[in-house]
Every structure is written in C-alpha cells, then in structure tokens.
Image (cartoon, rainbow, N blue to C red):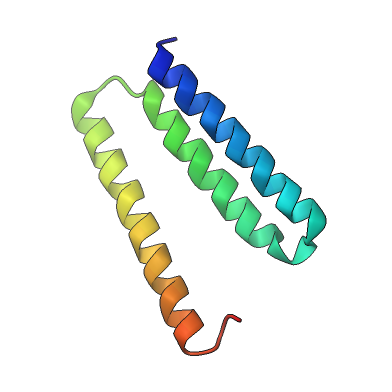
Length: 83
C-alpha cells in the first residue's frame, strides 16, 4: 500500500471515529453520521481503482453528490426545514 493510500485510509478511519463519537453523544445526528461514514468509505475505496477513466468518472460523480448535498442542506436550512 502506498503512503498516500495509507494516509487517506488513516484519515478516513479517524473521521469515522469522530462521526461515531458525535453520534454517541447526540443520537439525533445518527443519519448524518451514516451519510458521512458512507461518503468516507466510498472516497477511500476510490483509491483502490486502477482504471484511470473509471476513477475519473467515480470521482466526478462523488464530487457532484457532495456539492448537491451541500446545496440541498443550504436550501433546507434557509427555508427553516433544518435548524
């Protein structure tokens, strides 16, 4: 395993632990914790893809999912759906 892949995996594991600690303290964020963990696992799994064209497609798809997720959150927050 290359160092970059190892560092990405270690960083993802750290943030998964942070997500789980937050969920343990406040159970109302469990759905957000699940979404964060899933996105981190997907992003970390992308380091295992060796086909450059497929990797580019997966990265762009994940990037758009994250951007649209932030947009949906901002819209829901501005309309008072989320506190």
